[in-house]
Amino acid sequence: MNSPYEKWRKKKFFHYLIYPDIETYQENTNPYPKWLKPLPELKVWAQHAFVISSLSFYAFVFFLIIFLFLF
Image (cartoon, rainbow, N blue to C red):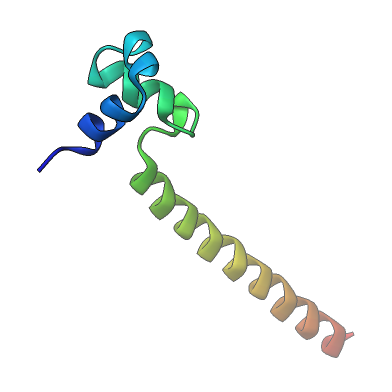
């Protein structure tokens, strides 16, 4: 069973001349910028940020309704 890298190397021989090793292949074919390397952690952080922001929004609406009913 050939790895995806081997299949890619056979298909794109001239690219293989440019990126001879797997590290440069992965770096140059990665669609994300370099600071997005830890993607799973970023996804979890984004989920937490979404939950916190939505909770703060609901809290704001809740206090707004209370404020409107009190005054």
